[in-house]
Every structure is written in structure tokens, then in C-alpha cells.
Length: 200
Image (tube, rainbow, N blue to C red; front, side, top):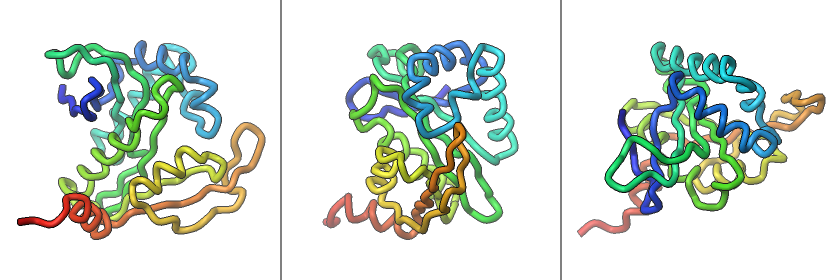
């Protein structure tokens, strides 16, 4: 299994697969209320069977090239990349349309891992992959307008707010406005060049 380091704090990005359903469920139990404030992901993983089904649905998407899911692990033992550590969150492509070159990215994190930049670094990794390796043109980010941390991630990723779908998301009995953010491949590459600074 591949593992991509997320900086110097013993954190890694790895595929999240059905055989990890127990670990995924334990992670969801730790962060269920926090994660579930704005997204329904925890409602899909309430026991071992439903957790496995949730991850299997993304394995099926990966096989069909219509989505991906990756976990974020912290406290990974030195010298043991790709194993151990604690699952604290993840990033995903909820949808991928290769013909149109459009993917929708998303994320989640349990409370103990908030404020360390893990989501932003993980999102940069997967967005760079889908643009540079897969040749996608547009990456979208759909977020409840009330989910300020997720809106802040979209800004840090250099995305532009395309608009608001007013009261389009019915969640736990209430309607929420959904913001659509996006970044286009030329914008992503220009931002990378600017961050790298002038070349000699």
C-alpha cells in the first residue's frame, strides 16, 4: 500500500479500504458528533457492517474510476511508512467524471486532529494528483455555508466561490445553503508556480 507523508509530523495519506472498516468505525465513534455537524458521512457508518459497506462503495467507485477515498493517519511509527498510526480523518473525491474532467472533492476530520493543517495538505495532494496525473480540468468543493472551517479550506486551496444554492441541502430536518467553490487546472498550476518562486 502506498503512503504519502503529510509534512514532518508523522502523518500520512493512504487509501482507505473495506478491510479497514473496524478502524474506520472506531474513528467515526470518536468524531461522530463533530463530523456530523454539517455532513452525513457518520450516518453511513454506524456499525461494522455499514462501515464496511461505506468503504466498499468507494472501492467500487475507484474500480469504476468515478471516486476515491483516502484516510489521514497520525502518529505513524518512524521507519514504518504505510502501517500503524491512528486514523483521524480523510479526503475523498465524492464524484469523478473523467469524460468531463470534473471531480468533487471533500474532507472530514475528528476533533483531536483539528488545527494542524492536515486537511489542507491532504487536499493539495489529491487535487494535484487529479489535475497533474489524471488531467482533470476542474475540481469542485460543495460545502454548507454554515461550515466555516470547510469554507476556509476552500480559500486556502485557492478556490473561487462560484455561487450559492439556496436551501438546497436538507440535513437532519433543516435546509442549508450550499456554496460551490472550484479551482481550474490553469489556476492550480499558476498558484503552484507562484508558491515555488522565481526560477534561476
